[in-house]
Amino acid sequence: MSMNQTPKGERLQIALFGRRNAGKSSLINAITGQDLAIVSDIPGTTTDPVYKAMEILPLGPVMLADTPGLDDEGILGEERIRKAKEVLNKTDLALIVVDGRQAAEDLTMEKSILDLTKQKNIPSVVVLNKQDEWAKEEHRISPLGDICTSARSGYHIQELKEMIGSKITTDRTGTRLVGDLLSPGDFVILVIPIDSAAPKGRLILPQQQVIRDILESGATAVACRDTELKDTIARIGQTPRLVITDSQAFAGVARDTPASIPLTSFSILFSRYKGDLKTQIQGVAALESLHDGDTVLMAEGCTHHRQCDDIGTVKLPRWIREYTGRELNFETSSGGSFPEDLSRYKMVVHCGGCTLNPREMAFRIGQAKSQQVPIVNYGTLIAQLKGVLKRSIAPLPGYQDLL
Image (cartoon, rainbow, N blue to C red; front, side):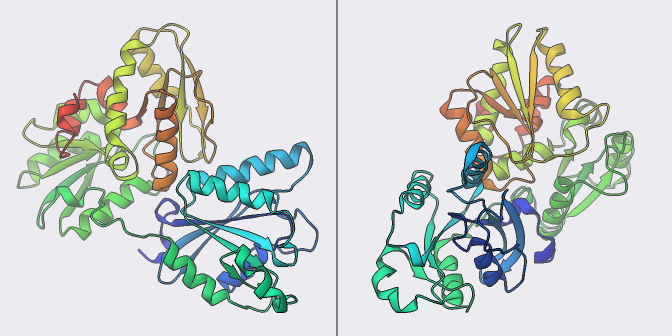
């Protein structure tokens, strides 16, 4: 997979914060060497977070986020500031951009963001920008930041890139979707239902990434529909090392897969890879304590067209009601939004998070844990609802004793 094709959830995220007209958009253009962000002398040109995928060596593929000004005004401005701060929850490195010409003035707004980065353990760089006209003052203002730059002239832009590379960690050594469970020469069967809910003409991101990881392990991926699973197992010529299924087909796949063959789901693998699978396995117990009138949050990391039998808004709520026998209320969040206050929910049911980076997934799980709201992911929940949770986590070392 080329860097240009690297999924958003696999890219390191670098976000720029600062006041209106501090030069955030110009700095993005200078870092990338392209006119990616709209630049204007009019304050408030950037009204919502804007994301740009690119490469920064030696980091590789990254996502740059340009955020609205922290000094935006009015009711709409307050909402934009809230959205800007929300970006921190998925940020691997924060660039706090200051107009170098005003650096000696009150920096309360910038310090508030800097304090938030420290609270969230996010590395940061304070950039004193617009030094093309005021470079002679650099000796005076440089103690206020980490580096002085000029987006216009390119002054210290290369040094800023090098500083970014030294501040951010790319070490996810040993973190694999499925490769750590395989040996070269293994066969893995992927069960991919092709029904009304499946996208036309393509595989979804979790399926693509699992296939890639299997191939990188020297193993062989064999894909089939759930309706052909039994025949595929019979004809493959050897016992597969693992069967991985779309969670929605868990019940039938578990029935058609001999007990001697390990079984799990794409969603459970992504939960282990992106989040805290232990917490989500433990959260399954909340199903037993739901009561009539309780509210459950169905949370997804992406936005997509809802179909008539959508998994998050139709199937799962129906299955949960059938399993618990309770009259429950369901609310939905999707995309970049995730409620700050989870107190009114008795349970959070989250997708596998294939489009979210690990930091944002960890933030969401941390939010639930800190507010003592049980959180599960689609795969673990469906496995419990279909009576196969213990079997579905058995192939994963270190989780078997949680049930």
